[in-house]
Image (cartoon, rainbow, N blue to C red; front, side, top):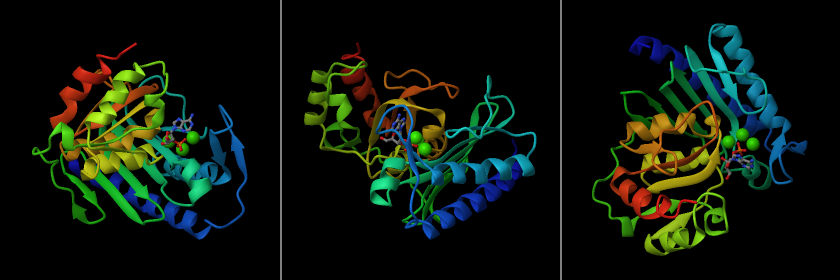
Length: 269
Ligand code: 2AM
Ligand code: CA
Ligand code: CA
Ligand code: CA
C-alpha cells in the first residue's frame, strides 16, 4: 500500500469512525438490549451489533475486494491476511459501555498482507481519536504523540493489567506476578484493551499485558503503539498471530526485557 492509498483509506475509515461515535453518543441513554455470550459477564448489546453492521455494510459497498475481521459476526471467516483486511471492534469495553456509559472505544485497524497500515481508536464519550498510519507517526486528535521516553526505570513504571494475573491462572505463576506488581510503581485496569494500547502509545501507562485477546482487540492498537516506538508481542515475547487469540504484552521498550525475562517467562506454566 503506498502513501496515497493509505491516506485515502485512512480518511474514509476516520469519517466512518467519527460518524459511528456520534450515533452512539446520540443514543447513549436509550434503553439497551443486553445479551451474554461465552459467560454471564461476556456482554453484547444491540449497539455493538448495529455499529459493526454500519462498518461492514459501508466497507463491503465501498471496497468490495477488501476483507473484514470483526467481533459480532458480520465479518468474513479468514484463513489468511492476504490483501486488504479491516480488523474491527465496534465497541471495545462493552462492560464499561453498559455499566459506565463511558471508557469504551471503537477500534479499527487496516492491514495489508498482514502488515498494519492504519490504526484508529476512538474514545467515543471523550471524543478523543488516537490514530496512526504506518511510518507516519501517531496522533491524539490533531496533536502528534511524541516517541516514548527512554528515561524510565522499571521501578517508576505503571502497568495496565487486571487482577486475573494475581489469581491462580493458566499462564503464569501468580506469586511471580504478585512480586511484579509490588516492584513497579503502580497498576491500572481500564477495561478496554484498545484504550490500554492508546495509553501505552501516549505514555500514560508504560505497559499493558493481558491473557487472551482477539485480533480486533489489538489490531489498531499495535499500529498506534508501533508509531510511538512501543513494542508488542505475546506475553512471553513471541510474535502475535493476527488470525487467532493471543496473550499480549505491549510496552515501552525500556521495560520490555525485564518484564519478559524476570517475570512472565520466569513464571510461565
Ligand atoms: P470487548 O469489550 O470488546 O469484549 C476487558 O477487560 C477487555 O477484554 C475489553 O477490551 C474486552 O473487549 C476484552 N475481552 C476479550 N474477550 C473478552 C471476554 N470473553 N469477556 C469480556 N471481555 C473480553
Ligand atoms: Ca465482547
Ligand atoms: Ca474488544
Ligand atoms: Ca467488542
